Structure formats: C-alpha cells, structure tokens
Image (cartoon, rainbow, N blue to C red; front, side, top):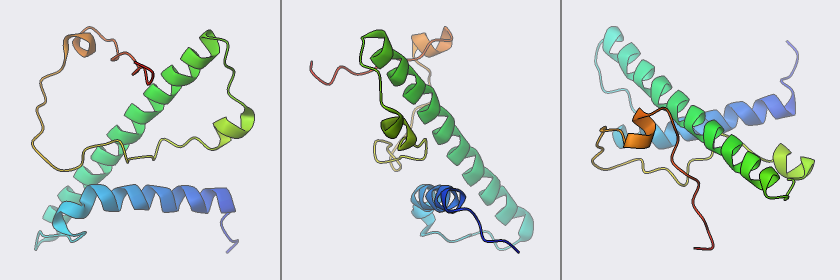
Length: 117
C-alpha cells in the first residue's frame, strides 16, 4: 500500500485532533455498552465535526472576500495555511442555546468582527 501524501496525512491528523477536542467531555471514551449506542455517539461526533468545518469554511470565505474587497489581497502562502479545522475560537463546553439570531433565520451570516473596534 502506498504511503499517504504528507498533506493528506496532516489533514487526517487535523480532523482527528478536532474530533478529540469535541469528544473530550467523555474523555474520548465511547460510553454506550452496545454497538448501536456507540454508532450513535460516533455519528453525533461526525455531525458536530462537520458543522464546525462548514461554519469555519463559510466565515473564512467571508473574511477572504472582505480582505479582497478592501484591497488587501491575501497571498497564496497565507491561503495555503488556512484550515477549516481550527477550533481554538470555538466553545466546546457549557450550556448552548439553539435559538437562531434573526440574521441567520433570514439566511444571512453574522458580520465579521472588526478587530480594530
């Protein structure tokens, strides 16, 4: 079997790293004693991971478009370093409320933060 390409291996390692962070509430352990329950846990983990990646991808696209619209073209080197698997900005524990803000209900995304404000 051929060795995985380095960029592919890093993507998989990054995905597993984020999955461990999301799954840390159970210390990375499957708690269900039966196969169906374990499959349910893994499915929920996959869903949460895919949601995080989609959310990050949409906002990275918004940020890149904003930079371009303001005349600050990102370099190819900067774009190559972007990954939707970043998670440091995401709250993993706590109480979550799933009432959507008005802009999301209207099919829009929240505005980007102004780091200088």
